[in-house]
Image 1 (cartoon, rainbow, N blue to C red):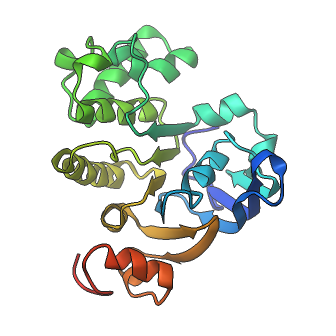
Image 2: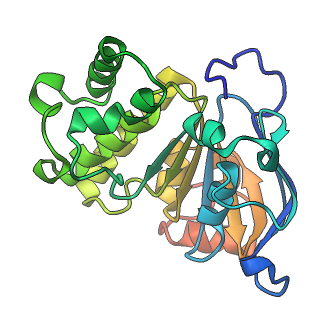
Length: 260
């Protein structure tokens, strides 16, 4: 995958009538009939209850799962036709608790994909330093630490830096702030929103928290038992007359259209 795809004219990610069945058993559908397009530069938030299919939909993008029916396209090409290594190295992936390698230093974690891509040491070191500063960590203080020496918020910052290391066009984030305390979570949400605005990546972000979705999304996709229940920009989403939307809005202690 070419990380520099500003000239790509179509939708960067596209789901075409996608279903995913556990062990390909039709009666056990996790995702059913999803059609969705994600244009370049969008921050798309997948919102839904536990078990609604959010993470499954995310994993279909980088071919951790392949659709049972339909097609998932990245840069206009079905994921089934990609070399899976090339596909995944061109997509940043951030999970809850960051998923850092405990025996690697911070610098080694962040520089993992560049090293796999055979970048020279000087270029990799420069990129690691650039990204640590970008996520608010001083390389002189943090580069040689191990994950166990970091706070939860610091580990998540390193996880974001690692996902950005090879300058991917797409960033997938699976509830990356869900395990953090409320204060740290709010701080990182605000910092990530500012960072996303500067970097102009195409981001697909999974959450079950409507407040987080309203803060970060350019568009919210609400999933309900594996199907798309609603799609809308944040303020329009709040006003939608759909029972599952109303249930999420009620969780805010607010009414549709009220300030959040």
